[in-house]
Amino acid sequence: MGPVPKLDERARACARRLSESEEVLLAAHIDADGLTSGAIASTALARAGIAHEVVFKKQLDEGEIESIGARRQETVLFTDFGSGQLDAISEHARAGDFVPVIADHHQPADATTKYHLNPLLAGIDGASELSGAGASYLLARALAEIAGADDSTEPSETNCDLAALAVVGAVGDMQAVDGELVGSNRAIVTEGVEAGVLEEGTDLALYGKQTRPLPKLLEYASEVRIPGISNDEQGAVAFLESLDVELKAEGSWRRWAALSAEEKRTVASALLQHALERGVPAAKAESLIGTTYTLTGEPRGTELRDASEFSTLLNATARYERADVGLAVCLGNRREELDRARRLLENHRRNLSAGIEHVKSTGVEQESNIQWFDADGEIRETIVGIVAGMALGVDGVDPDRPIVAFAEKDDEETKISARGTAGLVARGLDLAAVMTDASGAVDGDGGGHDIAAGGTIPAGSEEAFLERVDALVGEQLGG
Ligand code: C5P
Ligand code: C5P
Ligand code: ZN
Image (tube, rainbow, N blue to C red; front, side):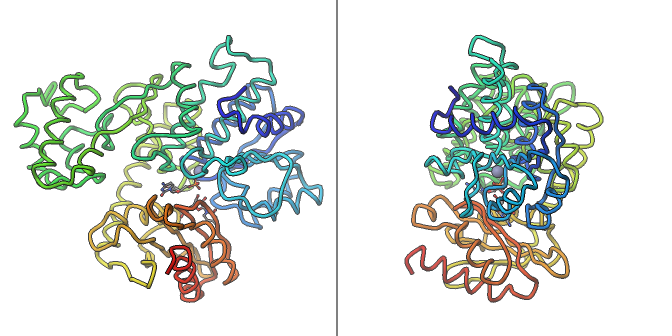
């Protein structure tokens, strides 16, 4: 039995179909979760001796599904997308173009299909309890089971070693609730820990623990703004120097990951204290400490050792048309590909901070129930969603209102991204429903999750689209 019993039967049916296929075309989405879902599925297929080819798609629209159909592959495995496009996919299935197998976590469209693994079909939340990589992992576990692996065999035979990538995918999709993976994701963490590929710990919840020099780790921390330290190089250095901790080794700044447990405790508690003294609310200050997921098989001091840094590295490849680089890194190629990924990461970081600067300088427009901004050609459509999510923490942006962002895709189409918060979802917000409806109303298409969704609309229809979004959100939130 797999780690998520409620999805066992679906996982087995999908795995059986794949193992009966001569050849499989594997199609996956271009973000951290999509890449890891693709890497997990590809590894599991290879281990099961199933021939396959992997392709990545920015978006699975009708044209892309058409081109997949034209490849005349017997079986097409979709990971981290497919559920939202079931209407179009099942038309191709009916026409005999291919047999679809779907491992996804997005809100499904109305049509149904035989081989469909999605947490939402079993009452499991697809935005916080299982990611695309997680769904792919369940499939991998079922494939191993069919091949005769049982709990006494090696993690590489049960596919439990792939839990590490599943966790990178879930963290990359921001599925951690208050810093911690929950629900089905938890069950996957447990398997990864048992397989010896993951370690779960309580640690400083800042990005860059493996790779950033200590002062930079604190200075750049955007998760919690700490007066006198955040965005303040001298402040960060002064704070560290006030502590009884060796800050340099061989003349250069140490990294957090190289500190001893006691040194980490010293810095963390002083940081918490400092934040509280400078008026950071207790709940916010406490979020400086959280659950971290370490990939124990990866070298210390590299992005790959920390699930959060690993996922950002992957986003930096696939969202810039270099999914091949990210996939190679996931599959264990750590030579030129890793160097290439790191260069892409530098570029990605620059783009994210320029994107945030754009939002800060232009500000957001307020409607009755939502707020929005236009990327004005300054933010790539593949990262505008990430920027929209980050914008909810920026001065001048209401952190408790849904935010919508527009980015130019080409002359004919506009990309949209929408982000909400857990609090808004608890009050009834469902952005997947809003994006599906409002984009459909202007001849576009959209979908996603309750808390984060996106779509594409014809250029020029932005105003009508916004009006509809505003009205729908108003209805969901009760006026
Ligand atoms: O396509 P996919 O499902 O992989 O993307 C999920 C998106 O939703 C990510 O961009 C992620 O950052 C966003 N998300 C979010 N807040 C959450 C959960 C997901 O912004 N709590
Ligand atoms: O592109 P963005 O990051 O804003 O996407 C947010 C969520 O909406 C992702 O999970 C993405 O897969 C989903 N989405 C979708 N259909 C689209 C565009 C985005 O399901 N046309
Ligand atoms: Zn995903």
